[in-house]
Image (tube, rainbow, N blue to C red):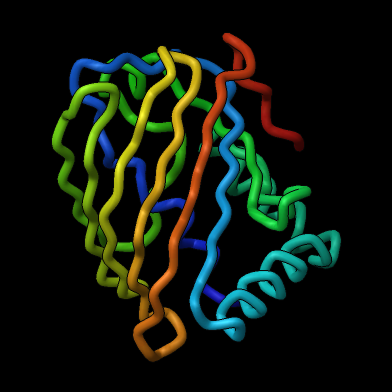
Length: 176
């Protein structure tokens, strides 16, 4: 399976400074757009592969994601990726966004009025980017990132637009 969808989940280390994030169940949706139609097609195919996993593989992946308070990524109506994630009280105290970071990554944040500027660099898969997060109180955020990835062996540029919204104070228990 392609590593491109993993780019969506690189922000766990992004801290919001004084901004608070409400603990509980969140829904996070991301849409990636590349200047290269082949990359867009590869991302779409990878998402379709996730939706068409054999039952045993799907169950294994759901259990792994559930251990981290998340659901399987799914194809959203707008062609992007949507998933639910749990943000614990500890994560809220650290001001973490409710998404998981993949690979060996480092990040830098700078608090700005209404949000933060963020940059990251990952070595596996190779990727880097920078962008802005804007908060709507403690129950929603939007983010725009410009990302460079080499997951397919050559540098690719893409824009990632993400939105997150708080759903409930309690996180859904993982399906077993």
